[in-house]
Length: 98
Image (cartoon, rainbow, N blue to C red; front, side, top):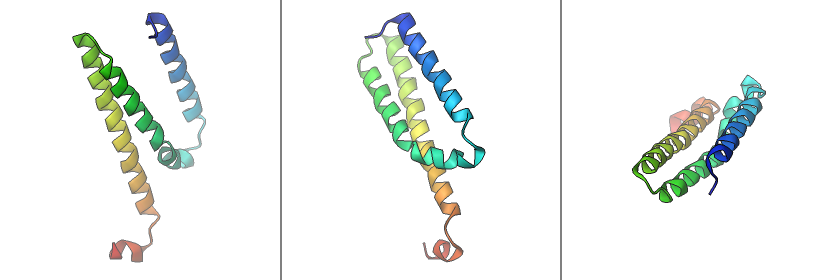
């Protein structure tokens, strides 16, 4: 497993890279970007579940549970946003019929 400072370094590098990438996306593309990245949310959820499965102490289990909870909320939120976005593109006739 990855130890202490190496894990912290990788986390900080990933957070910085993610922030830089997302901050350069034009506002008009944020919702389609969410739609296209829903699979990433699923991967994060699987990773959190794997980490929780390898937790030994109570503290690791608590942190893993919070990670799984937040990742699940992130995945569900991505699909909710996608559904709302797709609803905006339906015509009035399609909305009436279902």
